[in-house]
Amino acid sequence: MPDRIRKHRSKIAVAVVAAVLVLGLVRVEQGGGEDPSDDVRKNARRVHCLSPKQRPELVHTAIRLGEAAPGSTETAFRPIRNGRAGTPTALDKWSLDSREAFGNVCKPLAVLTGSKALQDPPPKPPLWRRIGTNPLFTLIIGALLTLATAMLTARTARHQMLADQLNTAAAEYLKASDGVRRARFRGGLLDENALEERRVELWSAVLRVPLPPTQSRGLLRRLDRAHRALKVDEFDNERTIAELHELSSELAAAVRGEVVTAGEDIEAAANTSGGGR
Image 1 (spheres, rainbow, N blue to C red):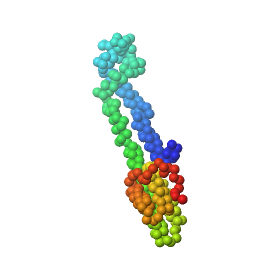
Image 2: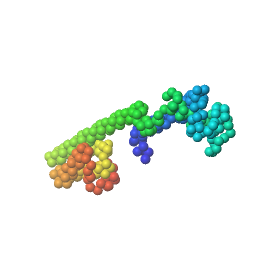
Image 3: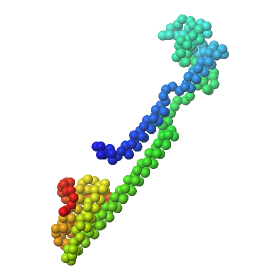
Image 4: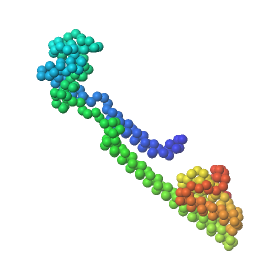
């Protein structure tokens, strides 16, 4: 697990940063509390409703809305509590003692008689819509898309480079193996060191390419068997020719990115550590 985390640490870091930014954006859109302008608007409505011109209308509105008993006046205001008329009080005192009831009466009166500035703003759109239209969210999405594109491009380029290396190593090994077969046929000197070097290079190239584990182990198994057959059998031995042909076909498929089950006894390849000496 730690190895996998280290392998994908850049992706994890990007995901964490993106999550923190999005959560911060949600927090900003939700707001950290009541808007300060709400208090200003409430105070402005209070001044408007308790102005000399609006005080009689405030009493009449309270009576109509069931917040005051009929016959109430500015100086003998009888608020309704629990369905019953309360003790007479002054209008200003009632506005302070019963702020919620006062707000319920003053707000519609301010809408009818006051300016638009005294009215509450329209409700905000849903949170998801506010986040979606936030420029910061657009910037985050754009940055993530750019980063994802760059990472995908880099990954594709790396895979292509590794495939090219595998193709080159395979070609060099097959060329060296053909040279060994020809030298054996002619009775000349065998350059086994060169063949062994090509085998090691091909082995390393197979390990570097991001193939499925079974395919990678199968290729190594096939390489080991072909190498041993090449060193032990005659150049025109059917087994040697078949092993080299299969190795060539499976390497070509790996270079093309095709997933194939390479070799026989694939699981046994895990126990093969280094070749055919």
